[in-house]
Amino acid sequence: MTTETAPDTAQEADWREDCERESTDRPPAAARLVVLVVVVVTLLGAALGFALHTCHRDGSHRVVPADATFTLDEPGLYYRDAASGRIAHRPHADGGPATVGGPSCERFYAAGDRALCLRARPGRPASTEAVVYDRHFHRLQSFALPGLPSRARVSPSGQVLSWTTLAAGSSYATAGLSTRTSIVDLRTGYTVRAIETIPLTVDGARPPTADVAYWSVSFAADDNRFYATVSTGGRTHLVEGDLRSWSAHTLREDVDCPSLSPDGTRVAFMKRVSTGPADPWRLYVLDLADLREHPVAETRAMDDQAAWLDAGTLGYALPAGHGHATDLWSVPADGTGRPHLLAAGASSPVVLDAR
Image 1 (cartoon, one colour):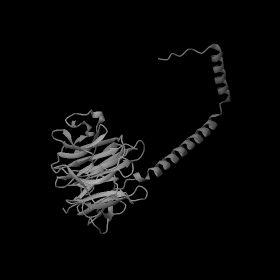
Image 2: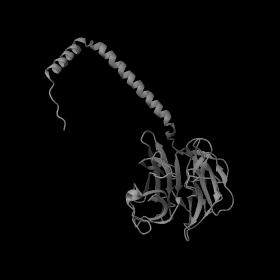
Image 3: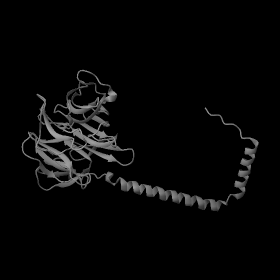
Image 4: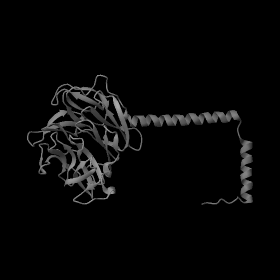
């Protein structure tokens, strides 16, 4: 607590003299009004300049809704088009003309009757909007999230969704990763804002919750079982979780960004093949029955959660070699064949069957 003391006599006299001088020298009311107007105009100009600078800086955050005729009812490949920032559709996964008409998203996924779109919100600190759409891209629900858009997944039925946001400056290729992963059950409306609260068992022991971080969830067809990456004790693990029993346990180390196959028997994942910062991750497939793994024919480094385009094909994004754009590639999951370019300037692939 601070106590103020009264001014001594000399200080009080000087203060009164200054007040009297201010009263004598004060300009007329009209002059004061002119000064006030000038100050206000100056401040408004500065504010407008800052707003324009912010708008220019955050121009990529401009939200564009889906065209009225763009839906998920057509079979084929859906993906994010980097040039427009919107969702595009192509009738055939391996080629053909594309239609760009979906909403603007930075991460996208769809299954069943639902689509999930993540996009960065303007301003600081970094934040994300997660939007749930129906098959005709009618907005059903939205969530405001901290961090940058990172991963998005929808269960095969379309009823359970998950997303991961990433703290600004974090990277999956570095230690000290800061993530936030949520799960939403659209049937009940139940939302788990941070799945770090799920009791986790690692080699029979319970790590402290403060040392646990999840990302890249992938759902099984039963809307209950899920796979994800969990980081604890400075190591990453493949984790299998059970929503009904509210529990999770690790299966093995060194599995990042898992993606469960349509038949639920395999997991595509990023495997660390180098301890250095250059090319640390390669695409592998793990057999859940015996936990044996094999590399696919893609030998370039990646930083993406691959998607199963069908029972035997993986889709994923790789850097395009200029700016921050990525190209969309596919490769057989069994290790044969070779990579195939699906779409230039694209990411977030998903293949939907005919209704």
